[in-house]
Amino acid sequence: MAVWHAPGRINLIGEHTDYNDGFVLPMALPMGCTTSVEDAREGWSVVSAQASGTVAVTPSGLADREQVPEWATYVLGALWLLHDDGVDVPPVRISVDSDVPTGAGLSSSAALVCSVVRALDEHLGLGLDAAGLLALSRRVENDAVGAPTGGMDQLISLRGEAGHALFCDMRDLTSEAVPFAPAASGLSLLVVDTRAPHRLVDGEYAARRDGCEEAARQLGVPALRDIIDADEAVARLDDEELQRYVRHVVTEDARVLEAVEVLRAGHLDRLGPLFTASHASMRDDFRITVPEVDTAAETLLDAGAVGSRMTGGGFGGCVIGLVPEGEVDAAGDAVRRAFADAGFGEPSLFTAEAAAGARAVR
Ligand code: ADP
Ligand code: MG
Image 1 (tube, rainbow, N blue to C red):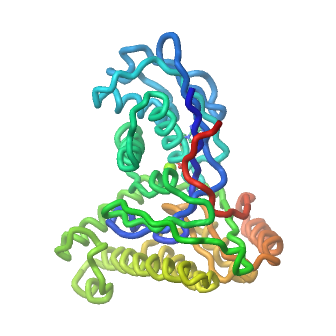
Image 2: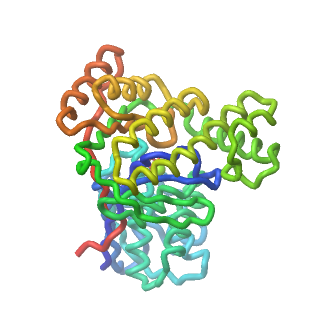
Image 3: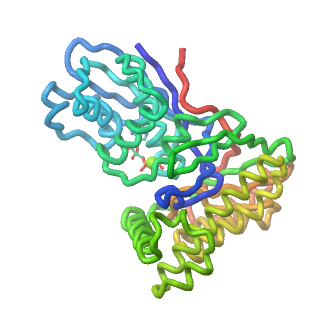
């Protein structure tokens, strides 16, 4: 039997830059998914503590893809892809249990997929290296589930380090751990899960992605990551929407690089203005925020945060703030009050420190 834990994540800065070959700076959360893989007598089966019923698959199900509930494709997807790759997958029973809230932008999906892939790698003796583990995890979400995610989620879930953020170059998929310890600067990372209902996420995500690709094509570069001067590039585009997309992506890449310098220098308070500028860029240029998210970000600033921003793909999800340690409770109360006053549902709040990436559990 193999048992692995893989974490959810928060992206500190660098939103919608991943599919533009750019930079991101996520950290792993203490919350995660624990997966066990054990031999089964016959057939393959999947069970989740967060979903009802056991999903069982017959031998033809590995080849012909039987109808299964969507959540189970995140697990069976790894088996299907290995089967397609010519691996002889013996019958196994896979059990998963996660404390990452689903659909909150904290990447419960990567926690699930990466813990499954690591446990399968060990149990089946696949001997995948770091690149192979990442590639299989990405293919499960992109190809088996059909979610067009950019790859950051799996990278941080596999490679995160405690007390560090992970500076990732999404062009060559290299990563470097950078110390992230807000407590050393008297700060806490406060996370507000707005629980806002996700609206139009798939269509809007695809529209942004297509728009960025179209802008890169018009600008004659392989990806927006290759644009250095946002103003110069914007001036060469006619379409107002594409101009805004380019401005967001190019300035966001620059903010990630600046954030990495700030972390290296250990001046975490200087991260604040970068957070806040990133939020304004997502709100005004990329237009992926919603009222709940803007309210949370503004309220945190009013309550003394040195910076705040939405994290994740947008249209709901979480907001993070760097808040002086002594003011965390008051800031949380202020957000709850602001949500009640605006008639929003109750948010969920927690503070988070950077945790380790996927690890074996014994
Ligand atoms: P996020 O990754 O931001 O939480 P996604 O929509 O990418 O949101 O992934 C959420 C989906 O992942 C859920 O709807 C479910 O299908 C699947 N999932 C995640 N964790 C579990 C779990 N513990 N058990 C079953 N399915 C899960
Ligand atoms: Mg996800």
